[in-house]
Length: 226
Image 1 (cartoon, rainbow, N blue to C red):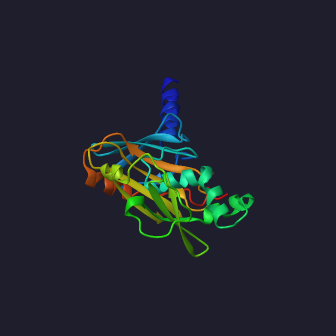
Image 2: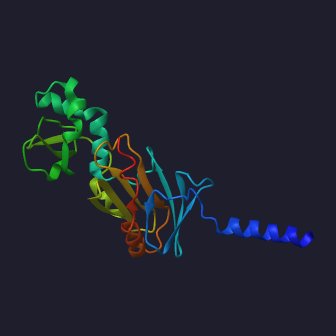
Image 3: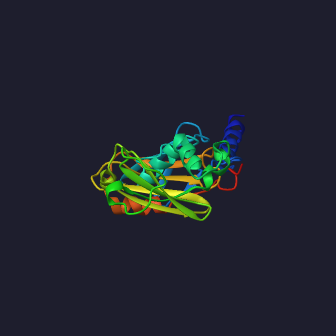
């Protein structure tokens, strides 16, 4: 009787070991095979960590993911969404009530210090110290504005900006051993969509960090369409 019980127990244990997970957890992104992805607590967690040899990163995947240090264009974009858009559309004679319809169609081409700019402003502004060159409906406009941060303050970080698989990708690498990371967000509907953020508060090897972050691919570009 005891032998029969042990035999049943052995078979049950073996079956549980060999049985594949019916719903295996799939991370929201892939990364170089030298890295391991570890979700926090639950397998459907939107946060977790990544171990790449001796380097460790944190990741998150939701609407309000950490964006890292902002580029000058990103800072202006937020200010434009906040209130600059009203002034812009008013000066190009478009009803500001329609601004929500056209806001995402405005491209930011360049940001520069006002004392280095040579051209015509969309409007005069003596207190402004920077200029954003914008494109809307194939026409360019030079929008003066004030910023409390000089452009050269961003020199502590190298930014690598591009698009991949329908996503805007920003990789930022510290030159001084501080934070480095990645942000990926949808090009269309980006304000309400989930964003993938990977970051580390310290940077040991900038070249390795850049290599690993460039290998990241978002797996949810089909599931997250809205």
